[in-house]
Length: 279
Image 1 (cartoon, rainbow, N blue to C red):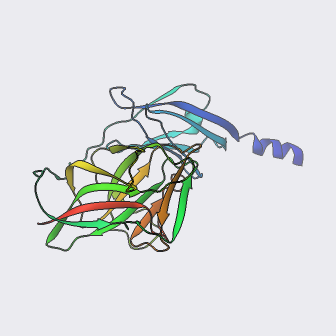
Image 2: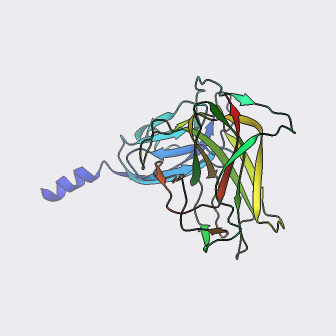
Image 3: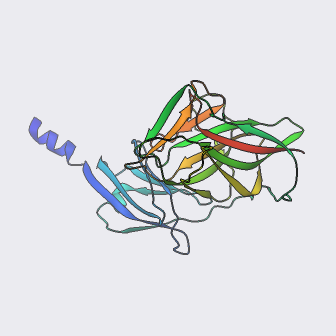
């Protein structure tokens, strides 16, 4: 009888490989969508064409696949409804969002800049990031005075020589209102961008060891903001070598699996630059 009971209990567990494509209402692919299994530590990013492969192992039919993409309503599917299907086509619906303030400034405009992130021209140690980094994020806090406003201007990072140094990478910029964030770890960050901002890195013979991306428009940040740089691809057999220092300030980190922000204990190689203007 005990043996029969075990069979009944385990008959509701399954193992599954989900694959397919994430698309918008016009069936255009949504690149780098985030897929996450609720209640489990399983997550993945779709690739540049919106395609995904997600191994979920054992699951219950009531487990839920949650898909998110900036500017679209989250899509939730019960695993029991889609398990066993091949080449899933999962369509997302646009969200109704208010467009954040975008400011275009003349090229020669001179404004006071505020920068987060150490230069790392010298450092206490050499560090490395490797492996499955898609979805890994690093960000900095910005807190404007009541009569001031910050406009996001540049992002970038500092790197150094090392074996199999990263030759190229696709990144995404995220901007959050962190007014409700009181302590770490936290999930109370609200992305204020109406659509994703991407940029590409390609390794060049840059002796300064600095890469920067100037955003073509300026985004007005919330009064209390977090600006974040997100890896969108895995490093595979390459490494991201950088110089680092023991201590950082106002630095946050988020992993794809957890989806929760936490304080970073060391100074990361990334930097964010903003312009300060009067309200």
